[in-house]
Length: 501
Image (tube, rainbow, N blue to C red; front, side, top):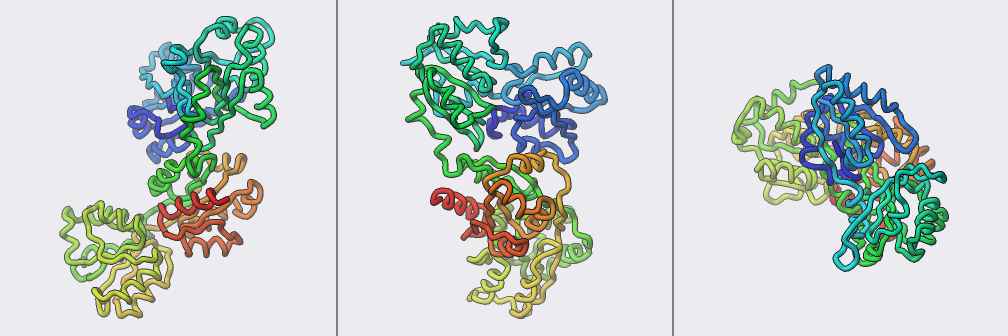
């Protein structure tokens, strides 16, 4: 199955459907790891890791692995970058399955041949310039004459020339094209990590593009383009000008809770790497929650401090009730726009939301409200098992009768299903963003935040004061703290910092 060229948004609908139902996923190195987060939590993920000459699993063993998992009754996805039948050994692997009488389906993917140039603002054809393209692999180009590519024909052919997997042999390729008659002034472009937040484009001519690449140590994976259409990039470059282009951002939330933040970061051009530090599980003691559900009619207020609290509470609620009216006459308070938005999605009115998205802020909002008083009123505070103890105390000082009810528990995430822990350790990132104190604590215990910041010159962003306080306690002063304590505020703060740097 083709995973597309890098941008997770370019995965096909059929591809997304199959990943969501997979028992086993065998993934190549260039596949966007965020696609793996779409798999069921109990799916087996195997990294084949093919990149250039470094193969984690030899091809013969890989073929047998696919056969063995399929024969055992598993729904197996072989996830390959781009399109599996274009320079991807998909044909070889399908042959192996066919020879073993294993049923299979081929799911095409968006190829880097067209997608990567498009993301660089280069149309591979143009009515006024060229009406044909030639695509070859530069992988096998060598000094001897055993190449299966007809380089003389390629040099003479008037259309756009696209070469995949050729950066390591770029000088040999350009010399060969020059020797075979392609004009030295032919526009050229190299596009590295195309369609991802790390996309980088280098433009020149056939005669100097190899020198330019060597000067900046331009490395694979990259697509090479020769042709007059390269000139269009000057006016059509749309992708690399976004505010967070070139910024790799590590998101530390639980995978199930990171969708909105990932989407906002992607829209601004960032490359998002998920390293969840938290897993949400049931609270140790569910009796207080059961008591609340059985006695909903006795509460005047339900207070939610996070989206997690909303999701978890109502997952329990709908196990016992099938009508939202069974909430009775409870009013609802919410901390944060995301929390309020989730409640509105459930067609529930939020009666009180503080201007300041903190626990202290909601106590202040009650205190200053001319419409509501919580004196002698029963309040169910629905939140994490380990949470800021100041909030129930502050509400009690206002005369409320507070039940502090855990609806979920944060525990450290110990698995690395997406393979991103090693990637961060080896390659680093521009940013790590934190949305909770528990994420800070868990990340620091896993990586030593001070050490990895220093090693890779990584900046840190915080969603708000409580998270910043946790960062300071582990010796880190964040470069950015959101002014609006929500995902949108965090992304806006990142964009502003990068813009002003």
